[in-house]
Amino acid sequence: MSFVISPTITDGKKLSVKDLNKITNEFIIQMKLENRHAIAFVHRNKAHTHIHLDVNRVDLEGKAFNDSFIGKVSQRAAHVTAEKLGLTTVAQVQFENKWHSQEIRNEIKRRHDLTINYQKPEDLTKYTEGMRSNGVVVNPVVNKSGQLQGFHFFFNGQQFKGSAVHRKMGVSYLLKSIALDNKSQDLVSSGNTIKLFNKLVPIPQKLALTISQQNLRKKSMKKGIGI
Image (cartoon, rainbow, N blue to C red; front, side, top):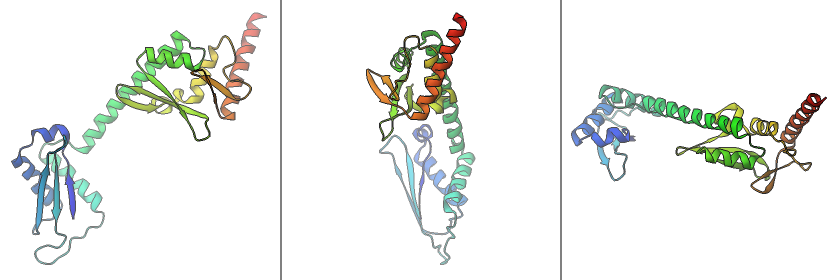
């Protein structure tokens, strides 16, 4: 049976051969794989130091190891080993990554709000230019039919789709927000296309209808205010 024991990059840089030997032995104990032939070797040829461990499934008395649910069992053994030896666990890494990701998404949303509320872009091109001036790169996502499906937001080395940043940054909400500030013309043409970087990009009919209704409400409000 083969295992890869992989400490975090930060922990790996501090581990000596003696430390790596302790990790391997503790993992074998937690897996209940003692009393059998095993060999382990370390890879340091990449930034991520890790241990390759090969263990015989059959022990020295001829009894085979029950490898049912071995993935879950080995994850548990790795977690206990890390806790016992004071190393960073997978759960800790996942929590830190999730927290960091949420912080970045919050910052993208804040810059989106600044662009919409203060720059009041009249079309998608102006919106993407406004976001770029605020440090966020916005790229359109086009499906196989050539229709605009959504947007990806790049910031601080990470990428998120609009709805993953915030539910009001999905393509429908975003276009409705821009339509409210469109002073010169309808955002969507009669052919269900929208202007983006001097090109006409098709959008789904349902989305086009939603934006058109938004424009009609806006015109009705202006007409009412005029009366």
